[in-house]
Structure formats: structure tokens, C-alpha cells
Image (cartoon, rainbow, N blue to C red; front, side):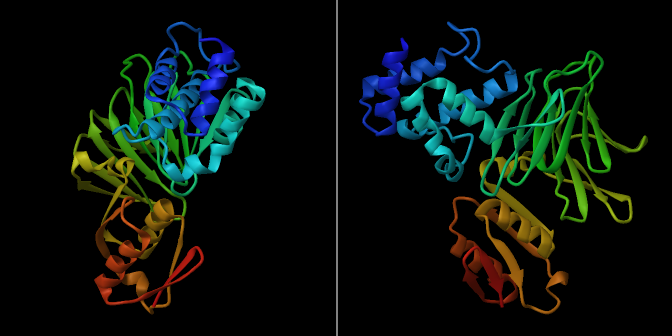
Length: 322
């Protein structure tokens, strides 16, 4: 397909005027990435290239009404929809530039930063083919290329579910606030939001070592979770259901004996609202419920208030429990 044909297809795509034949043609064009071309023009980094390919696929899937869940939420797609318009005006180079500037922040030499906002999830494929699912309001720092002896990775804020490609000669090492998590090839979840009082590491498959400044707290196996209390620098080992570790990737947050801060964080991540309370002693309350992204904000708030018999009032992006 030449540039003129592709421009015509994308113009029709943006106006939602593609017929079935042209939609399939556009889908096939996406699938051809990496087969007839050596990478994506204008992008030399494999992480950036994979992010772009995923973004293109999401846009096509939304119009095709495919059953596969888009990698990024529709709220985020709306925020950056204007960027694709540049394709029809000034060609692919501009789209690549806008895409990169909205998804990847250049950091110090040899690193790049990828971040999310409220209601936004990202799937990142690393140079070693490991996969990282990034939760809302999270931030990671990744080297452009891993070293010969190990694979260093930084979860600077938030939550991520990791599916690490096996390499017995190069351990995968994640730095997240005070903790260091070391693996060879496994899948696990790290929740490390700075506004919360703890950091949680839960294992789905394989084994995971958790340490702080050289002190190893334990080697976790599937179904185990370490909760590190930041203020007291103590840990708690508990059992979890491995299949639930990445539930948030599919829009579900399971809260069990959760405090108000954890509840407020979940609401901010999914709905982009700030949850506050006028109830005296609310810090001692515990919440047991499932928050789902496919449930409306009002429905979720009714469930939350029913737990302790309260009401709520909405003011813009702020919700007050009374």
C-alpha cells in the first residue's frame, strides 16, 4: 500500500466512513508491521514502536467493534484522538511525533519514562519481550537497552503487573521506593503508590525475591503476598488468590478490609474523582467490595455509602461522603 492509499483510508477511518473491505484492508496493514517493513518509520526504539503499534490497533478495533478489549481505555483515546488527525494533514512523521510526546517522556540519557493518568491503563512490551501492564496514575522508568548482566527497571509510582521473559543469565530487577524485587522469569504484581502507607508484592507464577538495602525479606511463591509497611519498615506475609493479582488490568479492584485512603485511590484511578469524607472517625472504617470500571460512578458510590449507612454529594470532580 502506498502513502496516498493509506492517507485515503485513514481519512475515511477518522470520519467513520470505512466500508467492510477497507476496514479489513486497514486491519491487514496494521498486521503487516514487522513483516514487510523494518520497524516503524521515524521510531528507532522497540518500546516506542510497540506502544505505537498497540495504539494503532486499538483505534482500528474500536471501529471494527471487535470483542478484544482495547489495551488503553476509551477515556484516554478521546483525549488523544486529535493527534491522529495530523496523519491526514502532514503525514506519518507528525503522528509519530505527537504519539511519542504524549506517551513517552525523555529522561536522563539511556532512559525513558512512561506514565498514566486517571482512567488510563497501558501495556508496555520491553526489549526482552517482557510485558508490563501499567495501572492508572503510575510511572515507570525504563532503559533503552538492558545491560549484559541484568535487566534494571524502575517503578517510580503506582502499580504494575509484570510478565517477565525468562533469562537465567540476566535477572530482572525492579526498584520501587524502598524495595527491590528480583526475578528470573515470572508474573507478579507490585502496588507502590506513594500516598499509601504500604507496598504490596503478590506472585502469580514463579518465584520473586523481595529485599531492602540488601536485606532479603523473603522469596515469594504463587499465592503469596508481602505487605511492606513503610513507616515501621516491617513486613507481613499473607495468602492471596493468584488469579486476582491482575484483576485491575480487566477493570476490577478487589478491596478487602481496605482503609479510606485505599478506597479513595481506587476511585481516583478508575473514575478520576477525589473522594473526601465529613464523617468523624472515617479513618477507622474498613471497606469490602469490588469496584468495577464498567459500573457507573453513581452506582459505585451507592454501594460504598451503603456499607456504613452514609450519603454522598458530588461537586464537579469531588465527591463528599456525609
